[in-house]
Image (tube, rainbow, N blue to C red; front, side, top):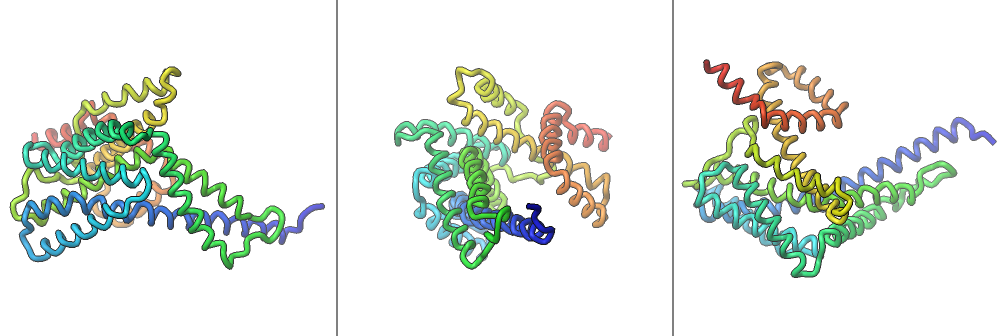
Length: 329
């Protein structure tokens, strides 16, 4: 029997409501699992840098105290292996970043990447000591996020009737969509953790150089000139070999995470190149920037791929350096 048009339309609305509900639940989980940890992670290096750098203003001292309190709160709220490992990684990366800041003249990005690299080595050595593998750590991360997601989703289902008939969205359907997202989070947890640690160090350094009375080390440069050592790309060779050679199949998940971190870094470099040149091409017109932002949202996957490609090309072609030389000559 053919379903009436009104019933089909109602089923479509129910399915849309179910998908929207899954999206809201996922955003809520992300806000809980990501936003506060990011703030807490950034508070760890920020509090140490400000306390050692002696803030120049009263507001700086207040911010240092707040950062110290947030850092202490976050450090004491770790639950499960992922939380403990992430906190240990943040503390170690903070210590390494602090040492490099006081003893070298490397750029902020360079210090952050070196601190992140040594942290990755230390964590890799720590996991066997605590009888964990990268796969088990990812499973724990997936499990914890999944538990939070299911609890959050349960509260949203209360009072919401979206099971009106055949073909409409059911709780199991929405739960399946959410579970796939949670599984993906677990698989890329090491990469997300590495990027979060690096982002925390960069954010802390940006605030530190604004508030400290006598900041140490080289201050950060504008994002439009963001870059890093051209030799970083060599780190992609071992992960690519692990992905291509069947004998190293056990290392494929970790290799994929390393490549994701590198792709993100080169993507950011590509965005920085675009930020460097676009104001000269578009000027300061608000409507032009609004149109550009809309186009980017519509073709986001292509934009991400283009940014990574542009970042890779900038390694060899050095677009911004060449342009600066041309303008100054």
